[in-house]
Amino acid sequence: MRVDIWSDIGCPWCYVGKRRFENALAAFEHRDDVEVVYHSFELDPSSPTDKTVPVTELLMGKFGMPKAQVEQAEKRLEDTAAAEGLAYDHNRHAGNTFDFHRLAHWAADQGKQQNLLDHAYAVHFGEAKSVHTVDALVDLAADAGLDPDEARKILNDKNAYADDVRADENQARELGISGVPFYVLDMRYGVSGAQPTEVFAQALAQAHGDA
Image 1 (tube, rainbow, N blue to C red):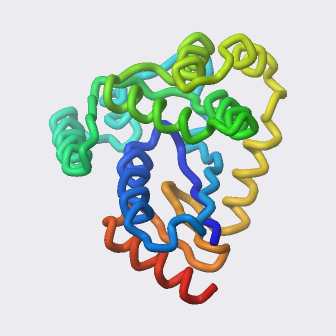
Image 2 (image 1 turned 90 degrees about the vertical axis):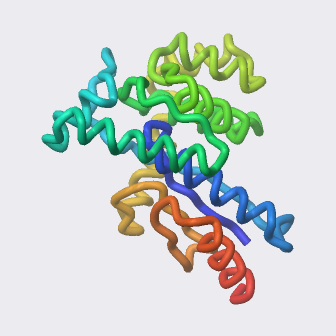
């Protein structure tokens, strides 16, 4: 059985959802039969590539929310993440994630995409570190066990893996995916959002039973 997951490194619910899904998968009796494939999805592909914005400021501008309301929402996210054993720092910055997605495709070819995703989520949301500049991404790659020099070459070549990112995003549109995280089980069942672990467990059992 295969599970395809569309997500974005800038998405806090993808961070939470990843932990919940993995908890469900770890407890699934047929987990060794499950292949998990991650796909690119940019929450804001129009965001500039040459600067980042504090998340609080971004949310205030995007949704017209007062600062106090944004801070309350971020506190709820922090509590939700903590309940899953995850650190969450709301002082992070948001920015364009296209280069990260290109790097993730390259990491997949090296058999280390999971390493990169785990480390990137942990440092971006847990430590408010950047995942947007070339230097930051090279450091992430090195910490995930990838060759930093090769990572820099990939990132400096703006065409490298760009088509792979766009193909993922085109497939998402074809499937009607408009937000992430989104999970597709055997291309038959869709699960939207960072659902509770129990919901993922039920979906895995149903998809495997119908295979």
